[in-house]
Image (cartoon, rainbow over all chains, first blue to last red; front, side, top):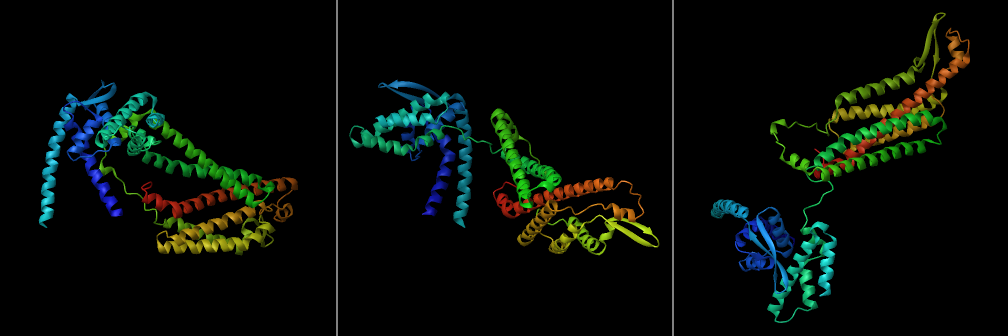
Length: 114
Length: 343
């Protein structure tokens, strides 16, 4: 049980490292928080609500996202979209990610061969 | 839906006013989106049960509010090592100065002190009082630094570090041979001097073919001498043992605490009892001194007695500090070291 919890924590930690990249990649077009969360979940990346919403605000404060409130069916929703600066950062992160994947593939395939 | 309003209100209580309304509105939007989605999935209108489920999934209001705020520290992780270093420098100085000043003042007033126990309690209480004040002031200074100069923390974080500037620290477990050897020699000299040649502690004159002595030690001193001899002998034996072992161990730390405790008790009894030194006009006259006014000699004797009491007060203070240091090393140091608070 404790072992499972430990593995679960490590998995969460691993995922946490890619959340920003995942969010930036999914906000090429305007989306409100819940729809972005659903979209990521549909593609296999479940992000907790308590993590996603504060993160969206943080990315906005870092000029990586832009947001605006919009009234839809008499309900206000905040829509987020990647900013020009966010696009540059996304490009750099994508390159870094590709390198990480390549390196990890090499490391893990070496480990499998042993 | 009253639950949602309560929840949003409660979240707001844990948020700064500047961002409160905006975040509250965003959380409301999130809750409504989630409810709408669940309602569609379950094919029924949102009810109280559904609201409870959604709020439970979001978690306690203070938790969701905290997730929107940056980590808050009284003293941030970058300033914390400097905080600990400051404590390590300032606190021993505070302890030494307070214990010294208390020891001196108590030494001067010991003749009227109610008892040795009360005196020890005063010294220890005074030291702790000063320590709490010092820690409080240092905490306040660092909290002000943390909040008033956030750029300082950034500067500390980005400070260029050169591994070549690292210095090896002293090994706190290794004993200092020089101090121990000097201590042992003085203890043995004290045993020999006070037991075999107590007359040397006073005034001597060569008259009519033999030495005449006027010792300044009183009868009271010789009542304490057996205990002092035991203390010095134990001290000398302890010093030699420690030199032979080379390193501090739990047993030697406990022995040091016992010895310092013994010294404090003995000195306290001596300081609060009758004077251990005095000047006798008649004995000085026997040396051939011209004592025209014995009152002057008695006054000088009282001054000497006060000086000796002050000296004993200082000795008590030093022993209290050393006892505290050994207790710290024995009980706290290694735990703090494991926690990374000390080097």
